[in-house]
Amino acid sequence: MVGLTLSGGGVKGSYQIGAYLAFKKCHIKFDGITGTSIGAFNGAVLACHMESELLSFWENVDVGTLLGFDEDYVKKEKLNQKDLEYFLLKIDNLIDILKNKGISIDGLQKVLEDFNLEDKLRKSNVDFGLSTLRLKDGKPLNLFVEDIPNGSLNNYIIASCYLPIFKKEKLEDDSYFFDGGIHNYCPVNMLLDKGYKKVYAIDLKAIGISQIVKDKTKVIYIKPSRKLSSMITLDKDKINDNIKMGYYDTLRVLKRYDGKEYCFKRKSNLYYKLITSKVSEKTLALAYGFFGECSKKDLVIKSIEYLFRKENKTYYDVYNIAREIRKYKKIDDNSIALEFIKELI
Image (cartoon, rainbow, N blue to C red; front, top):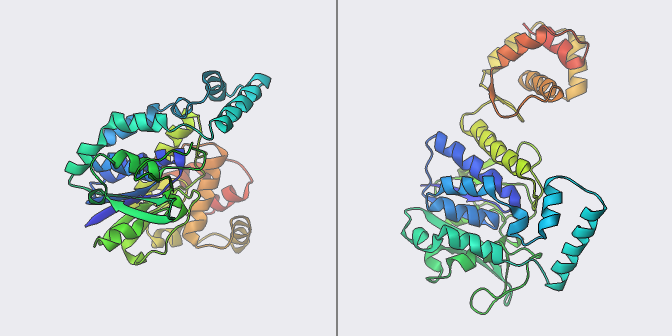
């Protein structure tokens, strides 16, 4: 059985739908999904085979409205109009949150109601589990659908997402809950304990405590190659960038593309050994001094990625490294990266 685990991370979780679409492109299906916090929300929707609806949600979500922020503040934040009025509105929003003892969860509850997950999850052929913490006894809860009472799935998904910024409300069993990331940020072991032979884990590199994985040989991690948005960004462009990054980072792992931030069609180590065979010792020393000690292959890729960043080349494509080397050989510049590239065969 193949499983998927989704970590917490707030709005960074938009990365996970991009990752899922890359799995789908590579024809990888999951028998079970577990998640914490936003990963529990994403995982619940995906376990219902509603990836199109989840993508639409993330592409169109208005985070400010969802969290109940003032409309004028949200508008200025989106337009990056950080004038005096913006800061006064921001202070007013903070005061309102303090007066209400936290951000209302009404928006989150409405979203879950619209997805209508209760019946769909219980009928799904995909295992689904989440992690949360019950405050009255400090008990960590790692629950699969079958462990959750009928009619309570939405409450437990919200319980898994319950950050300290939210207004305290009792959800189930006359209890308050806390975000599952406090004890199980990326609940891989839930699937391993259930007998899964391979688990892909989408780790957003956000705040949380990870349990020691029981069998690392069965787990393949996918992590952001660059910095994601903040956990509560209102910027739709950053959310869409998260989605694209998730897609290409996952493709890099699944298709074994070369590159760290960019994707390059895979070439053998022999290829890189051959093209660097005529580089002078002086140029090699300068390149190693600039990029750090690494293999010849990594040195070539680091050089190309450095040049890509300088010209703001899109991260969202799959490149042929031989073609890029030929292109840069024609450029007249005395940078260390270009000097190194020009000496390649």
